[in-house]
Length: 199
Length: 199
Ligand SMILES: [Zn+2]
Ligand SMILES: [Zn+2]
Image (cartoon, chains in turn cyan, yellow):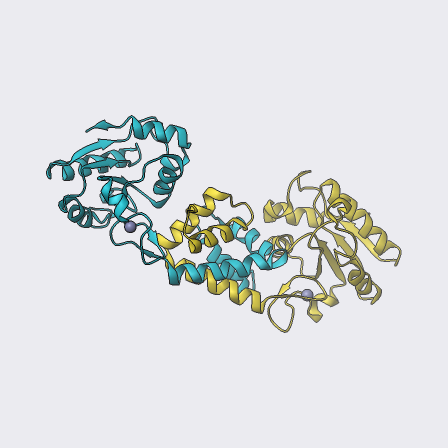
């Protein structure tokens, strides 16, 4: 006889696939949902279904998108002439929330990491190359994290833009080395952005 | 314009209702599910639906139950003459997994805590009183946590059983004071169970 009944086992197993959730937490979550907060369980099931059916990637910036128009790729943003490259959606949100930047973005959904199978194709760099070739981008702002892989990615991106004669900047390292961009407060991020240096 | 699009906002909000999940973790989970593991999102949505529709409480032991027959309330367990009272489902599972005990259980789904509105009715004690009145229980084993509220609950339970002439034992405190039963290893738990003392 297995430890839990089948449905409970499946629920605990499914919760374990959430990042940062181990076996004990998953069990605790399952019991909490079943025992104390069935409304939350219902909400979560519905939210997951809605998200799966209604959230896609913008083909241009690769951010999540659920409306016809991407909220980060409109004409006003294009006119800014600036395109900011970030590693993940949380970084984009951190910049939008904490700084006055309102240019375009490109979300890598990762960073160059050959050992993990993350190469230029996986990061959508062919699409970024197309965008850079369209002539609207006057400045590529690189906001990858200041980690070893983030720096390698930044170097690669800088070469891509320079070869097309586009100005390249890197946000200033007010962000502590080894830190994660998404955990930095808006003031520091604003400072880092305005203190950006040509690469 | 809100920080996230509506569906994404709803997903993040729903994930935040899981115990131990703050805003940053919820965001990270949502991005992970959407970006890297849509299968996990689908599995979780289905598992939640199945659990909500198929898992109920056993009216006798108050444990989660999804089959017609409760796996903890069969005739063999009744014949043991032992009934072990625990605070939560995880405690029941810890005892089943870590010890040879195969008697009946009663899951309080909490502990006496008047300030939190947890009184005898909320813990199902009227149902426990019925069970104790049926004559099958020769020993009530109290396995509430060794916390202040757990001890108060134990005292209350002991009085209930003693007034009916039923032997009452408390599992030995190999469990460290202030600790949580569900985090103790099976060996310690077995020891605590076999070293139980009359109350
Ligand atoms: Zn876009
Ligand atoms: Zn039962």
